[in-house]
View 1 (cartoon, helix red, strand yellow):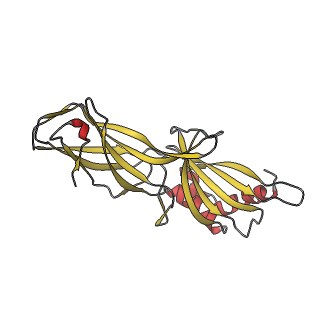
View 2: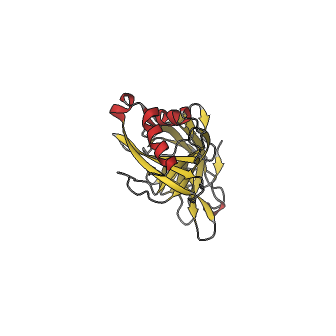
View 3: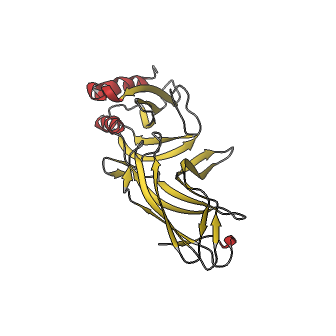
Length: 258
């Protein structure tokens, strides 16, 4: 459905519609679509047409958390467009999903708390940019699916996911100014870990996986967060017993040795 541009463009302003031809995507994949502009009652010049992904990002403030919509992976679709009255012009586009794009689906389940959309931006001279936003599903990469399935196999229960602003220490590559945390409830197998948060930072050859466990307080120790990092290479992911590898790391985290 066409959406009217902001009133600031003037009487008889244009309308915009974005149609996504790709139902879902994985990090590193391509979203294809068409942007349609329909002229209003007067000629209109639009300096630029752009598309990008957008997700809700938590920013930790001094006293509270603030959620902001953050764009990423922006691509310019067209330069200056002269839009005649009541005419429709179309612009096909391809938008590449960065490898660090937050995932919204795993094992045919929606990750509650994370949403990714494609946002169309029309640069309007003398006005706030007009936008049109369309949600899209982002599925887990095969290597991400393997790690998440192994964690569930060890008794952890998938709970939710969110995206947080900031930079991670110790990872090889992080190109986006935020990262996703996928949260699991604790497993009976590791009674000292109340919950587990998993973060993926992917590149073309593999990904860093950050495991953060919330350890329960003991008789002589206080509760605290424990972090472990491992590197997963795509070429060797099927050659590793991830249940055993993760069990060793999580057991150490639960005992407090890491």
